[in-house]
Image (cartoon, rainbow, N blue to C red; front, side, top):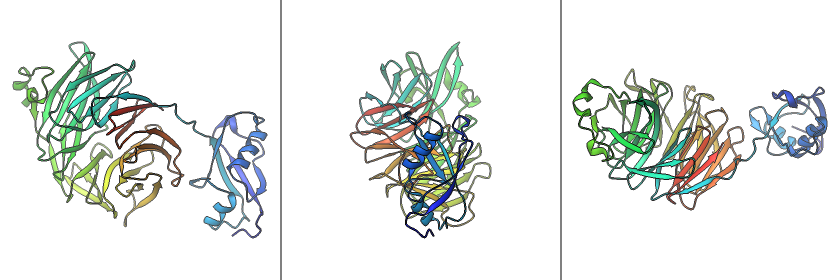
Amino acid sequence: MLAAADQQIQIKLKSAEEKYQIDQNVFSVSSNSSQTELQQLIKNLLDISDSDIEFSFRVGEEILQSTLRKYCESCNFSGEAVLEIDYQEKRKAPDESEVVDLDDWLGGVAATDSQCFAGLYNGQLAVIGLDGSTKSYEVHNKPIKSIAFIKTYEEDKKKKDLFVTTSLDQNLCYVAVEDSDCSCLYSLRGHTETVTCCSVSPSKEQIASGSWDTHLKVWSTSLNEPCDSEQVSKRRKNTGPQSAVLRTPLLTLGGHSQAITGICWKDNSQLITSSSDMSLKIWDTQLMSCGKTITINSSLQCVDWSDRSQLIAAGSSDKYVRLFDPRGQSGTIVHSTLQGHDLWVSCVTWSPNSDVELVSGSYDGRSLLWDIRSPKSYLALISTHEDKVLCCDWSHGKLLSGGSDSKLHITKM
């Protein structure tokens, strides 16, 4: 513990960014110093005191939020040793979101380099171009609950984007989108209740789905299955799922006692599911079994896996985002808890380019950007909806969010 109210402590300042490194890096500073004082110290040393550049400071695994004294007291640091502090340029707040009005609630969102996509509660897939133009195509006859981009492929010398959609009609559809055309290629049938969520494997060869029927199913994404050949010639375009080729699952697994609310791939053979039965399960599709169950005391609404940080992020009805380390051997394995939402957390998505950043969406109408090293304070407010946020996606340089206000928010990240 620090003795005096304004004790001097030794700090060592380090930066991984070469342009911000300093020659002398050990200093004696007041224990009452906060980010403001450290900020000014760095800028003076770099001779950029008039610059609007700002830095963030990390002590151990935490972002410094208060004074050095409060940090030292929280971790019982005596002040006798040198306190190492890493600093880096602070992420600038994203530009204001572009907002697109659509015809109904958004159940799922996805993006490619050139377009954005939204699955609507009227059963249509909305395609939004870079110029803001919108086209809608009938895919399901009931609300779409989730969508995911599978891959781009070529057919008849035309490039097409392949998506999977899930719906309240208990089915999934493989949908091919090109310039001014949309075809429902396959109707995936096997669930007996609403299909709430879907995820594409890293290899793009399989997708997984979860349902209110408590089961997860795994499906092939091949467009050339032998059993499909008799039906392909009968397929008609733009007439919805009733004209599509029928496909059955490769694998069905059960183990949850209530609805599966979220699903994601950990690798090409392992899946993670969240459920309203207050548990996460990690499944092995090769062994066809559940390898681990993680339980908490709140209903889980969504889940996402980060291959970079090796952490699971899950949102729950108690308004928190929890991070789990599945490498732990016992207990709940909670790595940390992100606190900032006021209502249910309905969606989470990790950054594709960072091991410490993720975005969460909530029934409180907000989507928040987090640095997981600062669990008690979000990094930025990405978008504010007029009603519940139901879905979000971070890919292809864009952060998308949508919900029950029938608006798609598009933020360049």
